[in-house]
Figure 1 (cartoon, rainbow, N blue to C red):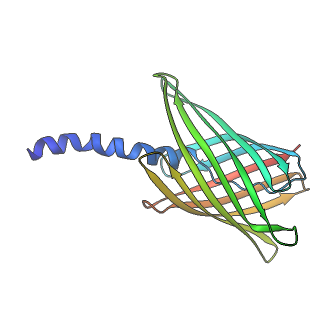
Figure 2 (figure 1 turned 120 degrees about the vertical axis):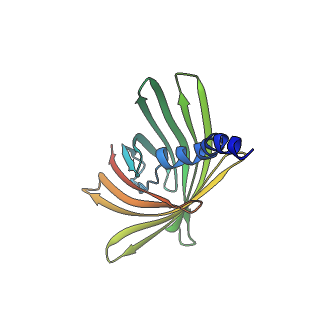
Length: 193
């Protein structure tokens, strides 16, 4: 009896970690600040102990406190072809004086498509960002909740934002997954058109 459980255990572990692997390997926490209604484009890089990923992104500020963003990345692995895509909104709260608050909310849908067997996996995210300036350094703390109908993964992170020439933005940070003990490093390069 125990012998059969031992042989079937990898199948249960594999099916349980699929959602975790998607979150760890493909989703990036990025924070591109308001850029006077200009579209922002760029690339995000993410690494952990087992995977390095990238995404191309664009973000358009519809108003001073609402942006729409999208990400896409093709992957080729051995004989499989994957495509990661994401779209969502980024909302910044306004305070009583019509100034921008330190709190932001991001929400979106993610999809990973395996072109070899036409399998499409979707998940959602809801994130809260808190921005603070420490000694002239813009720091963003974030809490993320990634979920499907049956599973959820929560993470926390910190991002340092650096602006060059008011058009070029670099941010880098660390994300730690609360649900299990794994971390990843994020690096984003953004350019305002």
